[in-house]
Structure formats: structure tokens, C-alpha cells
Length: 435
Ligand code: GLU
Ligand code: MG
Image (cartoon, rainbow, N blue to C red; front, side, top):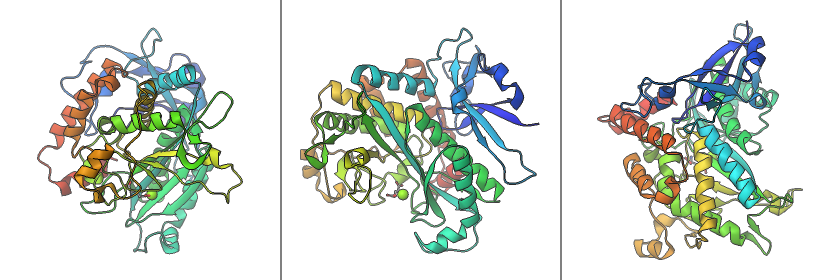
């Protein structure tokens, strides 16, 4: 019998849920399936944070959003097709539950539409490492593509037939490291797509007898796995709002405030976008992962990057124009990360923040005085530091429901204690196994 899982991707970016017979899904469309509030306080180590705001009390409903339904046919007769559907957490009376990350994003997208008149288009670009491949091959090489050829072509099929619009599947710089991009999508669909990509990569890898990991830092000193979030906005007439009409590399006045907001709050955002102890082995200078709060044009050391446009494309440049947030990894919940970045950008506009932190060279090559003059700050050096930045960022924090934040803080406190005492090698191994 085919089963379908109604899933929620939790605050630690782990997709959890319950299965129902596929032909019974319509019967669950309105009321969903049961869910337990304290499940939302699970750490990546599968230990429920103690204490947490929920304890043993209460019940929720996980209500499927049928438009987000995924069906990935299996290419192997002995394995069932993959069926799942994203859900929103609600109270038993059907009210949105304040600690649901997918709901947080939906609310922020609605605020963008209502207050700015902007539609949000985005794409999460993922890097990951495969293990179980035979042999080594040079970085970016055709050989590396062929070493994983069966996996990559099955993956492209799985992503395309399930409507995830794969764009590029490439061998990356690291040993057995690959990157997959899918076409940008509007609103919630983009964060759903990030989850789909992670789960479909894992599923196809299993079918090919490979293991995969999205962990930010596979080994100490290895090339890191990033998730880069590409963002663009259009106004009510469908016109791109970020690019400046007069300057091909430049941002519009509102775009400048938006970027200034993201940069201003970035040390705090890191607690949500680079949310694991191991994330901070990645966020180091010279890894192209970003280590400072700066905006760069085509600068891969910049945490926020103005991506290149090309006249070779049939798409007008203004429509190609997008900003890329790089201080993000796959231990971050995509709904929460995208919502928090959108909130920071909106605050930048509301506060009319000036944009200063631009660097078109490696910000680590500037001296401390030059960085200070530009307003460029180092990103936090650890999860504990990032969490303390978050608690000090009162204006940002005030935009996120307290129930969600309290659960998040409880998880991260417990997670830090779960891995306390692990050296960096053991930390890398530990997170590589989970993510
Ligand atoms: N691997 C780098 C990271 O961790 C990104 C390299 C690239 O620019 O693709 O973010
Ligand atoms: Mg890459």
C-alpha cells in the first residue's frame, strides 16, 4: 500500500511527520494528523530539550497544504514511491500555532505583500558530500560528474518529475562534493523546495547505495557545504525592485535599505541561519563561505553578494538581478531562515538604514580600522556567540513569536550541552551523520 507522510520541518531542519494511507489523504485534508508540541523541542540528537515551554501537555494538528504535495516515483521496484506533503501546525481549534516555522514564513510573506507590495522570489542553492563513491576525481571535472553519474541523472529525473525544476547539478570543489540548484520559486514554495531537495537527494542516494551529508563542515579543514539563498522581489506591477535603473551593479534606494537591514542584523541572524555548533567551523575567512557582515559585487567572501547578470541571456538584466545570502547552511530550517532574513531586510527599510558595509575585496584583507570605518563586523565565532547576538537584537526578536523563540533557545541550549566535550573532529563526524 502506498503511504504519504504529512511532514513538518522542525526548528533544527529535520523533516518529521506521520504517514497515512495515500488514498486516505483527502479525508485528512481539513483536520490533518495529530502532533505533539514538545516534538518541536527535539534537538538534532533526538533528545527533547529540558526544560522546554511545552512539557508533556497539549496536542496539535499537522494540517497538510495539498498544493505542496510531493510524489517521487521510485526507479527500483523493491522500494515504494516517495510521497509526502508539507503541513502547518495548528491548535485543535484550527488556529495557527505560534511556534510553527512554516507559519512564521507565511505571515512574513503576507506582510511583504501588504506593507511593501512585494512578492518574494527565492532559491536555495545546496552543496553536499557523497560517500560510497568509487575513486577520486579532480574538482569540477567531467570525471567527478561521471563518478556520480548514475546518482545525478536519477536525481535530475526525480526532481523534474516531482516539479522541483532542477537547473544545475555539478561537481563542486571539495572531495566528493556536489551542488544542485533548482529554479527560483515564489513565496512558501521556495522553502518547501529546499526541503524537497534535501529529502529527494537523500532518497535517491539511498537507492544508489550512497550516503549523503549536507553538514556545513564534513571534516576539519575540508571544503565546506554551504546553502546560498538567492532573493529577488517584484512590486505589484511585476517590476523588479532591487536593481537600480542607472547602475548595472547597483541597488535601488529601497534595495540599499533592505541590504543594510540584513547586514545590520546578520550577527544575530546567524543564530538562525548558521545554527549548529559545527556551522562555525565553516564560517571562516577564505572558505568562500563568508566571515564578515559585508555586501560585495561578485565577491564570494562577502556574506551578502550582488550576483552577476549577463547580456548573453535573453532574460533582461533587471530580471536576472538577485542578492545572495551566504551565511546559511543546511542545519538551518529554510522557513525560519528565509523569514528571519526577510524580517531583517524589512526592518532596514522601516528604519531607513544606510548602506555602508560594501567591500569588493576579501574583507579579511582589510585591517580592523578599515573594516570599522565601513561598518563591517566579524560574524560570530561560535553558536553561543550568535545566540547572544540574537538576544541583544531586540528589534529583530520582537518580530518573532515568543513561543517560537523560547522553544528555539531551549533546543539550542540542550544541543550545546549534548555535544559539549566533543573535539572538532568528533563534532564534524557527529553532524555529518545527522545531516
Ligand atoms: N563551499 C562554499 C560554502 O561553504 C561555497 C563555495 C561557492 O561559492 O560555491 O559556502
Ligand atoms: Mg557552490
